[in-house]
Length: 151
Length: 151
DNA sequence: CTACAATAGTTGTATATACAAATAATGTAG
DNA sequence: CTACATTATTTGTATATACAACTATTGTAG
Image (tube, rainbow over all chains, first blue to last red; front, side, top):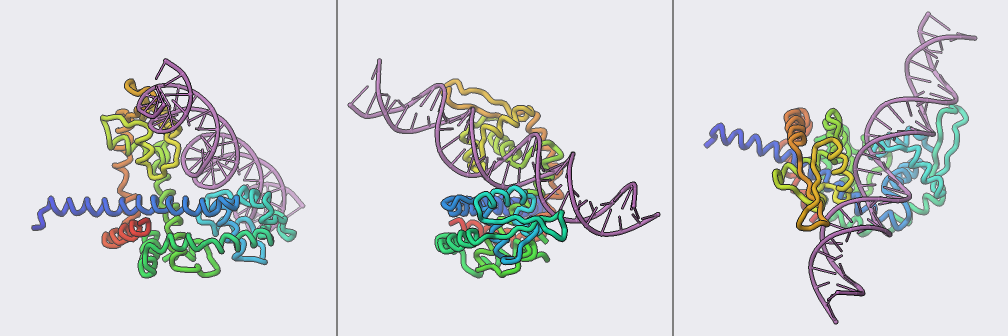
């Protein structure tokens, strides 16, 4: 029986499922972030700083300018200047003014930074296991749907 | 369609589908958050403050103690004391020391707060459309997989 | 060449998160 | 009743986000 009341009710239910998904993504993100933060904390860095180090390892031994670091970050509006400064103080990255274009600053991960990443990666087993509550096929489906959601 | 690899300009492939999913969830969460923040900003509040107002509307006209607000929040470690204080200064909530238990503080949304939520809800069409890049079935599947991931 | 726009990065301010310590009121064991 | 634990909230400090304003350098139109 497809009464208009049911149609509207169903329409409302559609909306609910979508809003539920939005909240679910943000809630799960916060959950993942906190697990990750715990992993990093032992080593005195934050997930944001870890993200920057991963980006720099990706281009190693070529340095990256600050702007390139920013546009590769998960949270783009984060302030790369200050994150990089924190990492520099700990000796994990080096900053160098670019000679051909004095506006830009080249950033490169140090040996110490690479060693830290290796250490964290070697401890990643528990983290991977956390994610294995779903099957590989489900992970793929999840990636497909999230990519589609963002258009 | 911008895949997660393209969004963060990742040169090297993700280690596993699982790690890709974790980054994808966090990236999509940040994307959703920013859209939401734009919606709220016109009204001078943040998504976190909006979340608190929604929680308080849920129990209206019964007040909630601060601890109950905290445990209903998406980000539990956020500081309800300070968020509520911001909302109080804008006249959207009222604080009252509980007479039977002087340790606890009862919070209630005001008429002005309820009016603000109504206004924001009436503008939600664009937000809902943003989410409708996926089908209802995909939204359901997304919710199922995310719930399973968190066990 | 000069004026102006564009680019690259830095800094300031408000907000929020993460976590620990402090305060204050209440409950409870001896 | 006193000492101590528990509960409820507040406060302090470090980090990060959001966004705008600012400095400095480079590119370019006239």
